[in-house]
Length: 225
Image (cartoon, rainbow, N blue to C red; front, side, top):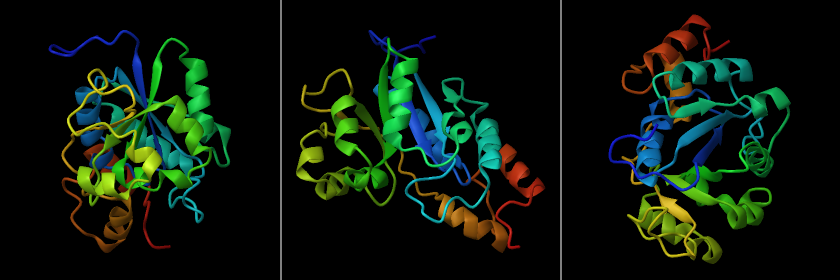
C-alpha cells in the first residue's frame, strides 16, 4: 500500500539494512523510516548478523537475543521486515553475499543498500565493495559525526563521483549518481554507548523501544558477569 503523497515506483524498491543490532535502538528505526519515506523505498528488510564481519571480537549478545529484540522493535513499523538469513546461516556472512541472496529472492524489484554515513566512509574496506557499488544504489542514513559535507570529503574519488547532490531522490538525480542522502535527523545514539550505559544503570529513556528495554532487562543482557 502506498502512503498518501508517496510516489509509486515502477518496480518495488527494497531496502536492505544489515548490522549487529547489539542492541537495536531508536537510531536504527526512526531515521531509517525517515530515509525510507523520503527516498521512496517500498520496504526495508533488516538482517541481523550472526557474526558481524567488521567486529572481530563478535557481538556482545547472542544472535537469538538480538534477533528477538529486533522482532519486538520492528512491530510498530509496517514497512519494515525482519529476515533471519544471516542468523540462520551462521558464521560470518558478508554484505555482498546477502545482497546476492536478496536479488535472487526479489528478481522483479530493486535492492537498495541502506547504510549509515559512518559506515559509508569506510566502505572501500568491505569485501567485494566494487561489486556492490556497481550493482546497487545506496540509501545513506545520517549518523553523527558524518553529515553530508564531511561524508563527501571523506569518500574516495570513486564513491564521491557516485554521491548524489544533497536533497536528490532516486527519481531525480543524475544518471551517474547511485549514492543518495537520506535526509533524516542525525543519529546520535549508539549501541556502544548503550552497552556501557546499561550495566552502569544510566537512564535509557529515548534510546530504546520500551519492549526492547523490557526484554534486555528480563534476560539480563549487557550486564557484567
